[in-house]
Image 1 (tube, rainbow, N blue to C red):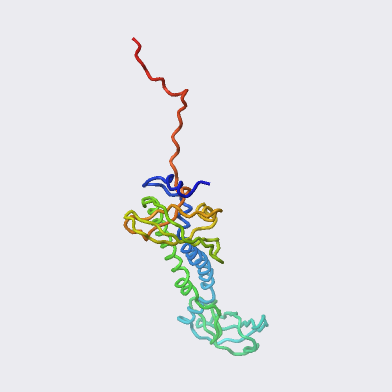
Image 2 (image 1 turned 120 degrees about the horizontal axis):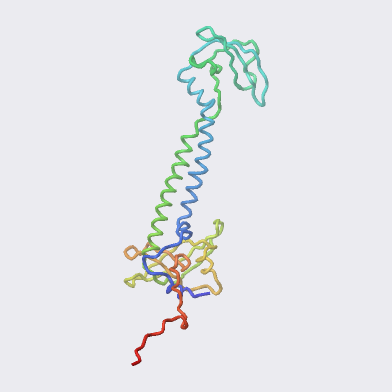
Length: 274
C-alpha cells in the first residue's frame, strides 16, 4: 500500500475535480435527518391528510354549517367496543334521510328520539347531536411543523454543505496532517471513525481539526490499516483554516496518464550528411 505521504504527491493541483461519494458523505447526519423528516414525515403527513379529508373534515363542516333536526334510532348493532347506530331524520325540505355512525356502547336504543346535525347542501352527511364522526384529530399541521419542515431545512443545509465541501476539495490547499486519534464510534450506523489531527497552514501556523470518516470508505480503510498511518493528506481553506478535511488520492478524479512512446516508435532525428 502506498504511504499517505506518497499520496500527497499524487493529489492533483487546484482546480481539482472531487469524486461525488466523499462529498455526499461529508454531511451525512443532515441527510439522515432530512430523509426521516421530509420523506418519512411527508408520507405519514400525506396519509393523515387523506384520512382527514373524510370523517374529520365532515365534523368541521358540521361544526360550521350544521342544521339541527329531529330523528329516530332505527337500529343498534354492537361493533367491537362500541355500537353502529342507524337513524332516520327529516330535513327542512321534508326529505327523509338516513344516517349512520359509530358511538360508545349503551347510549342509544331502537326507537329512541335523537337530535341530529346535518348539512343542508349535502344531507347525506349527518351525525347525532353531541357525537363526533371521527376520533381522529387533525395531525397534519403538527407533523408538518415538527417533521416535514425541519426535514426540508435539513435537506437544504445538507445540499449547501455538499457544495461547500466540493468547493473546499476543489480549491483548498493541500498539506500533511499528523493524526492524533482514530477511534471507531460505537452504536453509530454506518460505522464511523472519529479522527483527530493537527496540521500547519500556509503560514506555518499549527491548526487542529476533527471530523468523522466512514469506516468502509477508501480513506477509512487506510486510516485503520495495519500498521496504522501517522500522517494523512488534508485539504484546508487558505483563509479559513478551520474548514479542512482529510482526504486520499482516491477522492479525486485523476487526469489520464499520457501515453508512453517506445524507443522503436520514436521519430529518428534528421541529420545532414554532405
